[in-house]
Amino acid sequence: MLAENQEAIRLAQQTGSVTLADGRNLALFDVEVTDAVRIARNRKGLRDIAAQHIDQGIIHGALVFFHGPKPEYRLTFVARYAAFNLETGELERQETQPKRYSFLLGPTKAAPPPPASS
Image 1 (cartoon, rainbow, N blue to C red):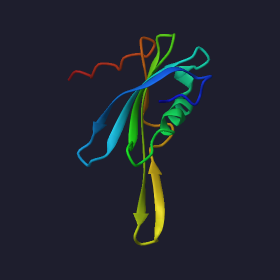
Image 2 (image 1 turned 60 degrees about the vertical axis):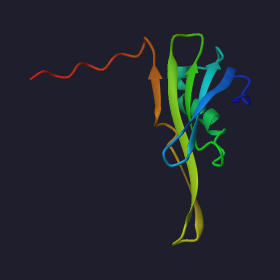
Image 3 (image 1 turned 120 degrees about the vertical axis):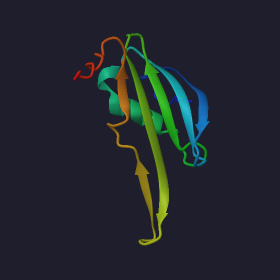
Image 4 (image 1 turned 180 degrees about the vertical axis):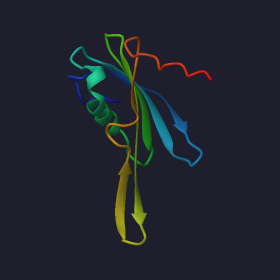
């Protein structure tokens, strides 16, 4: 459960998980944030909260739906993994970029324009 950040999180729960074709698992989280959190401006901070729960043993990534008292929402995907590089002999860590794979949703977000007709 995402409970470490009491000032930002009102309620958080894991609602499910998905096993991918390669055997890795994604956790699905539903997170209600407090009034203090501005979902539209807090992309990286919310992502970092979710990233804390990737252990690479059981959970390899997370798909997190953030919502609060205002009608704005954020859907965030975060993943990380470590792999041993045979050429260098070092452990390399890779993860999704902090400001990517996070999408603002809701009535204040404008719909994309329709495709141009020919």
